[in-house]
Length: 272
Image 1 (cartoon, rainbow, N blue to C red):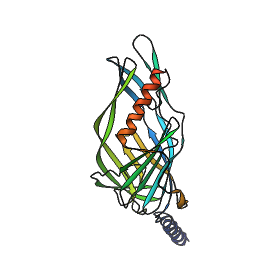
Image 2 (cartoon, helix red, strand yellow):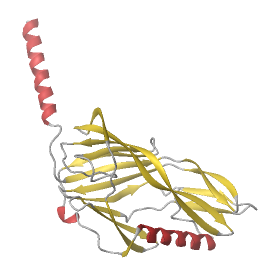
Image 3 (tube, rainbow, N blue to C red):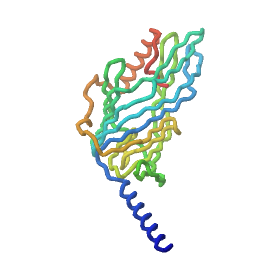
Image 4 (cartoon, rainbow, N blue to C red):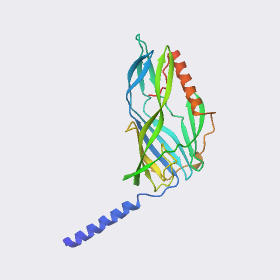
């Protein structure tokens, strides 16, 4: 009797394993993925009239969706926590608030066959279109793997050069200086979804990025939902807005910050 029970248990276990395997790594060439994004806060610096001030930058959590087919992806925001604020004191007792941009109307579209990226950004009620090419990095496979939402993922790492900002406030004038910053990027991608997409660093790997860790956990993206259902008519390049380059859009942001500070309003597009 014990041998029969053991045989039945072993057979049931094998069937459960095969059933679980059948439910994982389902190939997808189109669908919808929901990501959760965490931007960690911490101490940050801003120079005011030549004096460096330190303020606390709060954490922020957001959710976004990625709609994709075999050649295109479109990322847009779903929800976020309250827009975090940071109050910075100026010499003499005055202070101003820095409020992060909501990003609610921002859209990022990618066309993989042409390596083209189009961003739609909104600022103070006006829309802007920023056209660029998909950036490229030198990726290294680590040989590590793990399962995310039923998909076997491989790990890849790279060193990416991003633009960071130094902020100075001199006599009511906000100055932002860009400088290159090299950061470590770790991603986990699933080859069972053979689309070179993801929340960031898309268009470069032979599978969908389901998790990304940037700058040692300062920014983390994690897939929390995967569905094969998608309205493909929603995956289209945004056309609404004034076409500008990245440099031209940054100048618009800087001008808006200066105007808000002069009026005593929150600097809503401050990079913190």
